[in-house]
Image (cartoon, rainbow, N blue to C red; front, side, top):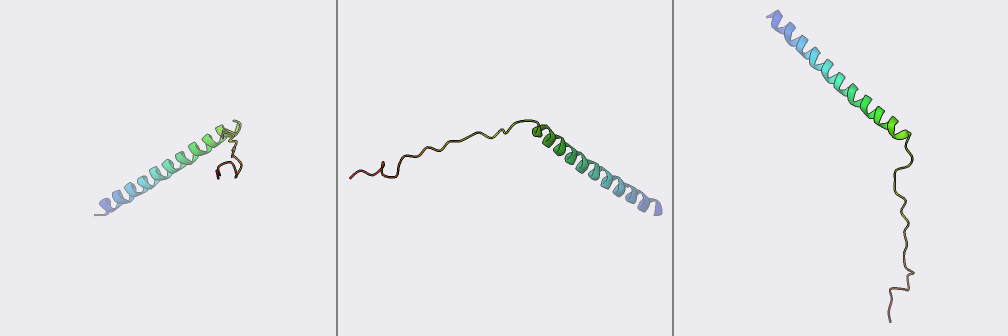
Length: 60
C-alpha cells in the first residue's frame, strides 16, 4: 500500500514539474516575441480622418 501511495506522490510531483516547465516555456516565448518587436518601428498605420463641413450635407 505504501508503494502505491509513493507512486501516486511521484506522479503528482512529475505532473506539477511538467506543468511548471510548460508555463515557463510560454513565458519565455512571450518575452522573446516582445524583444523581437522592440527593434521594429511603429507598425500601426497612420489614419487621417477627413470630414466634410457640418453644413455640406444640409440641402434646403
